[in-house]
Amino acid sequence: MKKREFLKLSSIAGAGVMVAPFLACNGAGSEHKSDSHDATDSEESPNVQAPNFTLPALGYGFEALQPSIDAMTMEIHHDKHHGGYVRKLNAALTAEGTYAGESLEALLADVDASRTGVRNNGGGHYNHSLFWKVIAPGGGSRPTGQLGAAINAAFGSYEQFAEAFFKAAKTRFGSGWAWLSVDANGKLFVSSTPNQDNPLMTKLVDGSGTPVLGIDVWEHAYYLNYQNERGRYINAFMEIINWEQVAANFQNVMA
Ligand code: MN3
Image (cartoon, rainbow, N blue to C red; front, side):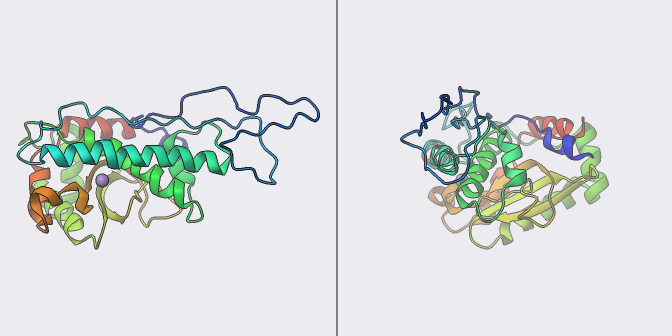
């Protein structure tokens, strides 16, 4: 898979809306600086834009996933946690002063350890935007079609995939995520990352790729209902996976 295709990802997380550059005046001597803009000595590009990432709607009610995930956890997790990542991502990009309208995916593919705000909050925005979509009321289904075949090819069977995914999620020390992703050769693999990192962050993770399924194993994702029993939460999650959405994510990567 070519780099360009790798970056051509499903737009699960709204990209920055195109807005007028806020350094519009270029007349001699009319140096303009936004009040909210962290002034630096570097030459400012006329392409600099105000970042405008937004919190996506959940797509179902806070109570829709009960009893697997309780309504209060969903409300706090979506509105407060994810909302905070979006707000802080916009703030971090504004502070950097070089945002030029890149997609969230492109930002994450390029982010390095020096850009803590974009790493943590851009990762948080991407990860949660994926998370809300790969779970759905109902559940109990299993991957079919091309995705099912690809899972069998990579892991041997659904059960062996499930075992690997469960283990990655259960053994992630502290806060983080477990993933099912597609690598540069189009093969599925399971991995886990700390904090809000994800496999798109080629400069920061071992084993980069495009996630098609992710589980949040931060305690805020499950503690109200499951307390310290992360394994019970992972099992509950795996029974409400929206495999149609995961299959669509997979098709999008492979297209
Ligand atoms: Mn979370």
